[in-house]
Image (cartoon, rainbow, N blue to C red; front, side, top):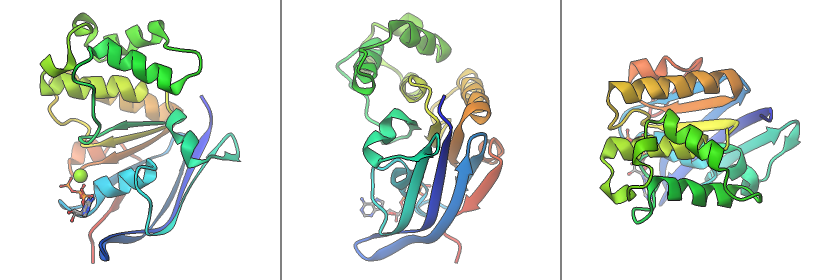
Length: 209
Ligand SMILES: Nc1ncnc2c1ncn2[C@@H]1O[C@H](COP(=O)(O)OP(=O)(O)OP(=O)(O)O)[C@@H](O)[C@H]1O
Ligand SMILES: [Mg+2]
């Protein structure tokens, strides 16, 4: 695993000139984690998207380094994993086909079937791997998002509403993913659940005056 740093400096986001948040600054390195809290609409998901490179900031900078070298936003996908309500799965493919496709996109070496089996077993979907995703329950889809997010062992893991639709066994699975990420990389969790925020070594609250 590469050693990564993330530096968010005075980041502001506006939609149609309406300010969502401003002056957000923090920095994280390997083994550090951050909970982003705040009321509904305070900008947690928006900030996650800005960090993931899916949205640009209106002001301020988001910078990443890997092993001391600065990282371009195009290369971020090799180092980042995201679990979020707005992540789309391919409904007309099976669970394992979704992972094979993603594995090919992320690597020049093609898909890694051993690693795919490992993550599908870890999220409890190995038995259902050949079923179409459209036939999955919402908790099974959430589990598949975890398989997606950790497949390439990302240095930076972003979790937005981490336990939505999950049963107790699923929440335990997430807690294991979180513990592993806290040992090996950077973790950011957007949540208003106190138990989930407690996974992280620091926190910020958006939407304060
Ligand atoms: N694409 C967009 N265009 C315009 N406004 C947007 C867009 N995306 C989000 N917003 C607005 O930005 C604000 C923050 O939304 P965001 O989804 O980041 O909040 P949140 O803190 O994640 O909320 P929740 O707790 O409900 O998940 C909201 O007022 C929302 O309406
Ligand atoms: Mg949100």
